[in-house]
Image (cartoon, rainbow, N blue to C red; front, side, top):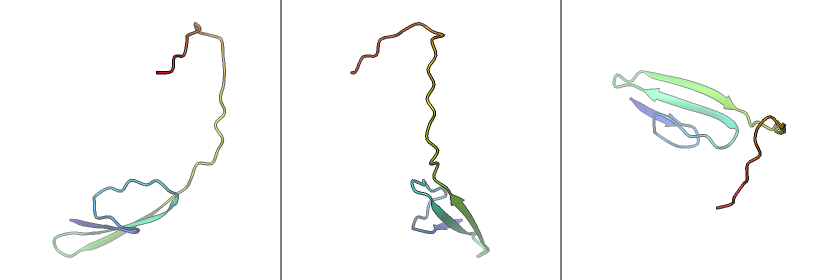
Length: 63
């Protein structure tokens, strides 16, 4: 099988680092073609840190 990704790439998988719509076209040895598209959204939710005192204090050392 061969793979062709929007934005470039011919590997079976694609590492995504930016939000966008990605399309892959797969062609098998008989020439049959299938296409799939997915949208990747950026998670813009601000993390909500929490603090508790349920455990022992530990010292943080920068290495």
